[in-house]
Length: 112
Image 1 (spheres, rainbow, N blue to C red):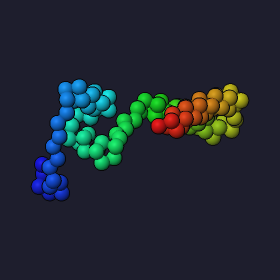
Image 2 (image 1 turned 180 degrees about the vertical axis):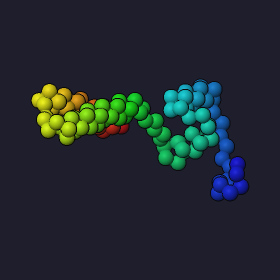
Image 3 (image 1 turned 60 degrees about the horizontal axis):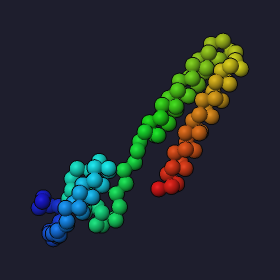
Image 4 (image 1 turned 90 degrees about the vertical axis):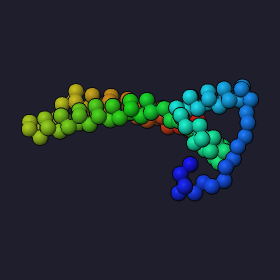
């Protein structure tokens, strides 16, 4: 323990083999490797949350696609002065996908 951590009171307790296995299983599910930190967090806050960022990565990917499409359309409109219906339709589809992804993420976060 670091002397400047402010943690000066030791706490010790024993667990059964089954309890230790369950603790290890929960730590693995959360991706936590430091048992002290995990036990301290659970004792103080009562829970630990691991957020699956896969949905957010998909959302960022959709945002990049939409941004790239919009930039390409803006360049074309600025150089030719024409706005094509196909471009607008493509943007509408992409933004629909984007909003579906956002709705999915928000509903999943609401269930936490």
